[in-house]
Length: 152
Image (cartoon, rainbow, N blue to C red; front, side, top):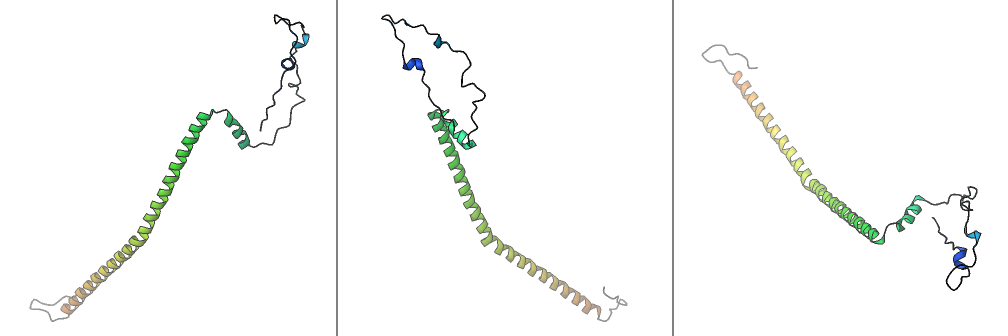
């Protein structure tokens, strides 16, 4: 995290003597400094601090004004609560649908399968009865029209 340190200028702490009309008595060449300073030395570079991205982002929150932060927090909270409510109600409705299918759909599917099986057995019995009647009729004596042909 970046730490700020306030440095006060010597001239503000020790004010020079002035006359009655406010003119300075001392004209000092020390007021004029060259551009080389201790701050801009390349040798004095501090090693990087051990801070995480989260620390840096939390330090940036002071840039955003408090009213804007409050609006953003409110909007984020409302989106979160809406998403949470929709996921909660969606999960509950999926649970109701799944249990309804299990309790009503599976027994209905089993009953429908049994009914189809019963209908298939009825159809096979009917075909067997027709085949037996055809064989019985084929074994009788031929009528006056001639020889009877065997049934297939």
